Every structure is written in structure tokens, then in C-alpha cells.
Length: 218
Image 1 (cartoon, rainbow, N blue to C red):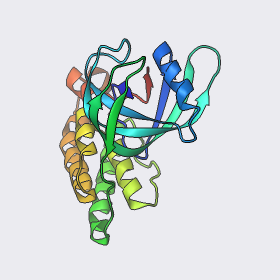
Image 2: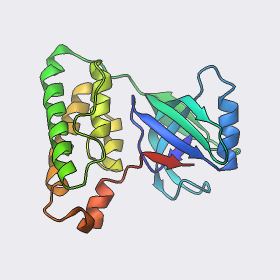
Image 3: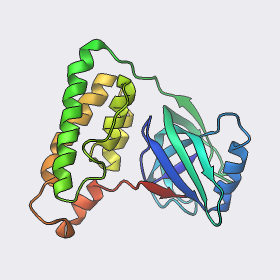
Image 4: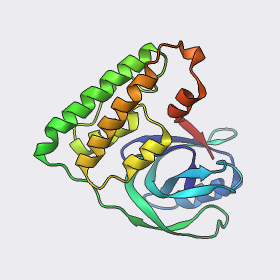
């Protein structure tokens, strides 16, 4: 398991720099597997380094797709797969471990087409507006997958939301719930993201809302 200060959603990339010895050991063991996967959960309290964190129990499996073993830290690129729930945290021996169970896969129905389109349009519009204020992490014209469920998760990931909102999206019981919650949260975030203050005067509340590192350290 990788406890991080960010929420990984299915179908999204995750870049890591690995410098702690415990995670180097974990990576070495994972690379012996045909499909090397690890779980990612959001840290509730504490920091990524040191192993004294408190963790949430909902997360996402990440599959390793590339490892850069250059000088110094190890670079890992992974992609989010299915959602999991932690049943039991095990002893960190030497890295975080847990027993997990998969959460059901979301399914698409034709009647969700209008909601998918509305959510995409709103997320793209708010991203474009936020960019005018220096508050956008993703471009409004970023490409989405043609497969609807994958596209829905991608919209949830690029929507300008904070980690706690993304964690809530990760618990969605249906694709309709995921889309509606993404839509509602994006609309609610728009006034904050497009506040009149210049980007360098944005207060801590706005910065917290946008806190979602593109690259995490572990």
C-alpha cells in the first residue's frame, strides 16, 4: 500500500519518486509480479514519509507501467485501476500492507448520456474560466477516453476539486452518482476558483482547494 497526500482515481496516471528504503523494497518485490499493482489511499493525518500517518480505508489499485531507475531516486509511473476497500491494516513490515476487497465496477447506461455530456461541458467550462485566474491544474481541452465509464472517472479527476471531494467521489455507488456529484461539486467550486483577487493573492482556502500534486513523494 502507498498512503499519499493525494487521491488516485481509476483511469488516471500517478507519478512517484521513491526514496524511502521501505518502498524500494516493496517496488523490488512488485516487479517480480507479472502485473505489479499496489494500493493507494489518502492520508487522513500525518505525512507521506516516516510511516506515522493515519490512513483512509477507501483507495484505488495502481498498476506500474514504467520504472526509471536512473541515478538517485526511483521514478515510477502507474495508472489507476479498480477501487478497493481496506478490510484490515497489517503490520508495516517493512512497508504498509493491508487486506483489501474490490468495490463494484461502475456501469454505463444509455440514459446517462445527457448527464455525461452536461458534466463534461461544465468541467471544461470551469477549467477554462479558472485558467484565466491561474487556478487551473488541467487544461479545459484535455482529451478524454471514448469509453464512457473511463471518461467519467477522468472528468472526476480533472475537475478542480480538493482531495476530500475526490475521496467522496471514489465512494460513488453508481456512474450516475459519480457524474452528478462531479457536476455539483464543480459548480460549487466555480465562484471560489474565479474570485476577483489576482492569483498571487489567493488565500489559503483556495490553495487548499487546489492541493493535488501531479507528482508525489514516497
